[in-house]
Amino acid sequence: LNCCEGDILLLLDSSGSVANYEFSRILHFLGELLRPFSIGRGHVRVGLLQVGTNPNLEFDLNEHNSQATLQKALRSTRQLHGDTNTEAALRVAQRLLTETEADVPRVLVWLTDGVQPGDVDGPMSQLKAEGVSVLAVSTGHSNYQVLQRAVTPPVESHLYFVDIDDISIITEDLRGAITEIIRAERLRVVHLSSHHAVLQWHPVLSADSGYYELEYSCVWKTEKDASTSCNDGRHHRRTLPGDSNWTELTNLQPDTTYSASLRPESNQKLYDTHSVTFTTLPGESRVHSPF
Image (cartoon, rainbow, N blue to C red):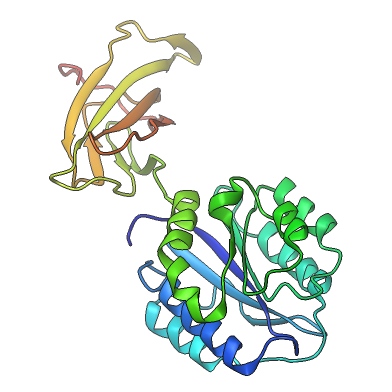
């Protein structure tokens, strides 16, 4: 899936209350859950934090840049046993997820057997206040109220109770819930000069599922050390194919601020419009037919 950009921290109950068989099944489930994602910076970063008597950071968010190394690390993970000290692990999770890039979606996926989760209300509330989305999977059927308070809405897609032998049945639903959070539809400028700008976005359409409507216009320009409104005020429009993920704007004016918006159009799903504002670099003016 080359659709997404974000950080996923797996909070995995590795205590003695989890049977060895259950632990191995959860690791296999995580491998299948994450397998479709493109891994690494600019895509999806994954970290694994184990819950035991003392928390153990199996691997952090920067460690893996490919599916191959991520899958190998999951297969190599060994159970801690010991007590279920979820509160201590959440303190580590807070540090990891608040030190990450602020404009990237952050997700905590808590996998637990539901046995003695501890006093997690405070730490979970702090994480959510920082903008972290919390999802939970419980292979037990106790402490529903604790888990319900821990997750971010909507509860019906962010909280799962499932028997360990049936855990594979929630793979697609949980992956879909994560994808909705980290789907990268943002419009960004990846190259800029005095007369050109290259805009890029993560594709959410395909060639046969829709198209993109791009609009851009001048907002204000700097002339003789003073900022003035643009005179033409025109909106320029382009229709782009559904399989595109970048476009170049040419014949722009130097030292001028532009606003651009991108709207995916599809009869299958309603998408948000994304926008970006940028200022071209200073340079020598040249005579040309604008845009």
